[in-house]
Image (tube, rainbow over all chains, first blue to last red):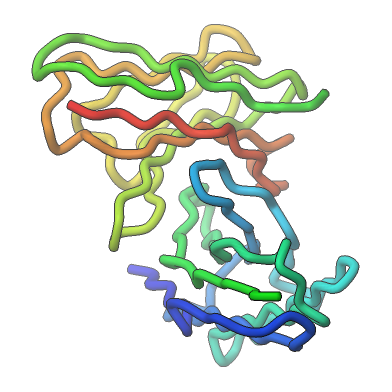
Length: 113
Length: 112
């Protein structure tokens, strides 16, 4: 059964720092991996989706990479801002016709001014 | 505005009293799903629907029912709620199952 781990569980940094959030998964047979942001009391917002054949995706200050063979993805946030404070979740969807994604428990990020 | 809506946003009920949480999307998405989020357990999928009249179980379907009679709506039914169903529930949709770039509703906090 797929397991998804996110490290660190919590992170507090000063504004302006470049950050790396990690997501690891135990089964490399994945169809895609998606990064989400969740603000307190709200739903999830999709940030980046990486298909299994891709190595990375970029959107603005965010860059996500995928190394399927080692079971790892990283989310890089450049020049962090207080508005980036949120919980970041990764989710992997398996191959083989299953449509049930497995989510990590998230990294809670605080960026202080 | 493209969105997924859920109602109610907050609900307090008692054991055994049937309830329905509604979910609606205005993006003509084929794929819809329900999740629950619990501290320390993360998000887990309850049910999903590939299209109208096509539904299937997720990881934690026990105690829940769903229906998909129209493309835009995907209600979650708790026939006899129990305290272990106290949770934060999210509905999500995507254009298709293969796309799976999901759009989430704002959540429903249920206390039983």
